[in-house]
Length: 450
Ligand SMILES: Cc1cc2nc3c(=O)[nH]c(=O)nc-3n(C[C@H](O)[C@H](O)[C@H](O)COP(=O)(O)OP(=O)(O)OC[C@H]3O[C@@H](n4cnc5c(N)ncnc54)[C@H](O)[C@@H]3O)c2cc1C
Image 1 (cartoon, rainbow, N blue to C red):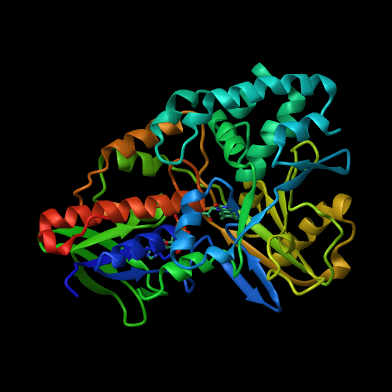
Image 2: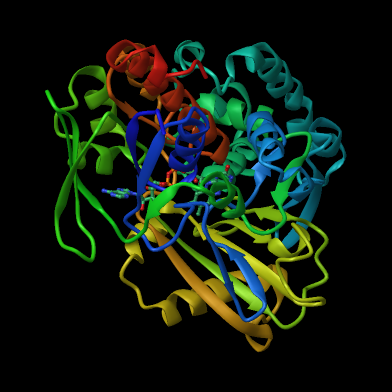
């Protein structure tokens, strides 16, 4: 092969995308992955007939790039369009909402009072005004709208009821983040991208990164301890069955969350370092219940207002996502908890986590205990980036400071919001920069424009 020798750290979505693009340009790519699975936080666990997506749950309708990439690798027929029927509980009863028609749905629902419905025009007007700034492609446009928290915006422009049952619920439901600390830009971004439909992936959420890495050399259970630029190239030190080893590459994409990236690449300086140091991720302890019988609920998901249940933020009924998630007639309910609860229960034994969660679901789902066939508890140290007011300034500065000629490039889900689509986009951009930089350093034969 005439291409360069390149390393990718991390076999999550971002690393898989970067590796796929670089391999397509004729480079030899070695992917190092600390875990024993491909997909990172897009993880699917298959057991006892159930398919549990224990990280990324689904794809939003705005993930055009992800859909295009899936189609380009022959997975077009695995991308299912699903109706975003959700519900929000109030006073113990689930109120259904069709997020395909959010305004109509919120105007018709008995979730909100008449007074609050009158204020929806303000939300709709602000959402329309900010729509073009709520972009995946660049973070600079978000800076000027990132001035206050969701709670402050809601109480200033709307009212407590709309904060409890709309703005705050959407942010904590989508990001598990406390809305009192989240940037209002996160609400408007989510409101725009949550409609008009969703996608799911037949075969599991890990099927896309797995397909992207087909043909690549992937070393699982191989944690990278250090990446260093030197005159010889990019020196990668990694562990594994054979003990610690070192190899020199022509370039590297570090596709690991910011804290991991900083640990293994201490040479990083400037605005990128400052942003990575500031990047705070929520933890998640999420629970997946495999049921002997699907419950009668038609909704895909439930977003839970803090007032209705402080600890549960989101419930997903995975059996509605695709026919392969559970055997016929059986069901999966996935439960996501608020970040603070997850931090407090990080060490709590699984059986106690499960009993707390099942108890929390009782008002809306009844007694699930007799239906439990299989239960899985997943803990994520880095779940989603917590975007506090002011975060986009640092993010935009980091973005501007990226040196396209650097042989070490970064990819991940940290700008602007943690999602599969963000990681796909960022993996592709990192690969493009690295490929471009190789033409200068190694000669035009080694790099082809992406
Ligand atoms: C509970 C949960 C629910 C979510 N729901 C959704 C959703 O519905 N839709 C959506 O779009 N997104 C969702 N997300 C977010 C989405 O999963 C992530 O944004 C995306 O998968 C991140 O991909 P990534 O490749 O950037 O990072 P990761 O998936 O974290 O991949 C990084 C990889 O790097 C590896 N690594 C780290 N350090 C090293 C090292 N030193 N050496 C070797 N390997 C290393 C890690 O093991 C990991 O596999 C969810 C996330 C979680 C946790």
